[in-house]
Length: 461
Image 1 (tube, one colour):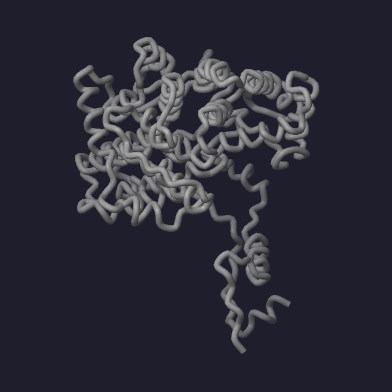
Image 2: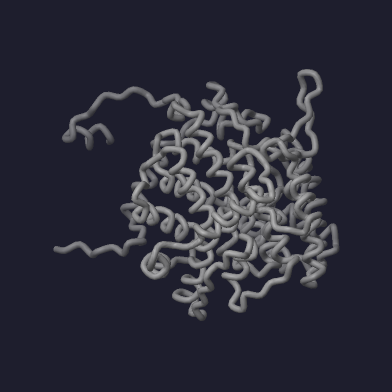
C-alpha cells in the first residue's frame, strides 16, 4: 500500500502529535529562571540590557544618573558621539539629503568633508548595479509576498557572484558592505515589483536607479510607475532612513550581526542572518502591526476624536479583545527608552507636515491621541518597571503609509537603512573581536538512563 504524498506545507496529525511531545518535554518551569537569576532576553528585571560588549558606533540614553540611582529621562540617541537631533537639524537646514552622509559617519567614525561626501556618494552610485541577468534569474524567479525572505535570498545568492566571498579581510568586507548598502534599495524594490506582477497581476515596472539621485529619491523613483515624487516626500523618507540606520549594538539584528561575525562567517551569511532577525514582528516588523492596528481601530471607533471611545478600544487591546488579541498596543514602549524615543519625536514633527500635504490631518490627530492616552492606560492596566512612550515604529508606519509605500516594503525599507549600522558593527567586531560570542545556558534537565529500544514501549506505559 502506497502512502499518500503530503503537500509541502501540509501539517498532518503525525506532525501535530510530535509538536505536542516537543512542547511537553521542552517546557521549563518559570520559577527556575528566578531561582538561577537568569537574565532572560539578556535583560534584568528593569529591562536594562546585560553588558556584553563595547561600541563607538552609537549610544542610547534613557536614564539620568543621580548618585547610585538611575532616573528615567528623555531619550537621546548619538551616532559616533553626535546627537541625532543635531544631525537631522543640520541636514534639513542645508536642504539636502543626509542618509549617505550618516552612512559615512557610521562606517568611518567622522563626518565627511564636502569632497569626501561627493566621492563616497559616487562610489555608492557606482555599486548600485546588480550582476548581469541577476534581476531575471534570481529576483523574478519564485517571487513571494514576503519581501524580507526575497531580500535574504538575493543577498545569499550574491555570494555566488563574488570571487572573494569568504575573504574577511577589512578591505574586502568594506567593499562587500558598500556594495550591499548600495544594492539594498534595488533588491527591495525589484523584489516587490516581481511580487506585484507575478502574484498580484499588476503591470511589471522596472526603473533602473539613477546615479544622481539620493537613496531616498531612488526608492521613490524605482517604486512608482511614473517615477514622480515631491521634495517633501523624498526628504521625509530620507529622515526615516537616517533614524533607522543604527541603534546600538544590543538590538536583536545588530547583536545577531556581532554573533555571526564573531564565528568568522562571510558577509553575505552575516547580513542574511541580520535580515532574518529584523523580519520578526517584535523587531523590524512592528511598524506593520501599528498600521494594521490603526486600520482596525478606525473601523471600530466611530468618532476618532472621542477620548473615551478611543480609550476603550485601547483597553480592549490590552485585554486581548481587539485586533489580533495579542494583548499589545503596538508602537508603544521600548526595550531601552523610558520617557521618550527621540526618533519618534523627530519623525512626529515631519509626519504632521506630510499629513497636511496629503490631506490626512484627522488620521495624524488620531495617532497623536493614542500616543497621549496609551501610556496612561498601560500604567493603569499593567505593572511596568519604567516609563512607556511611543517608539519609532509608531510613526514610521504612518509615514510609509502616507508615502504610498506598499506594506510589504515596510520592513525592507528598515533594512535599507539598518544595513549601514550592521556593516559598521561587523567591521567593529572584526577589528576588536577575536573570541566567538557564546553566552551560557544552564541545563535543568534531570539525568536519565538510556533505555534499549525494545524496552521503551514498556517504560512509557
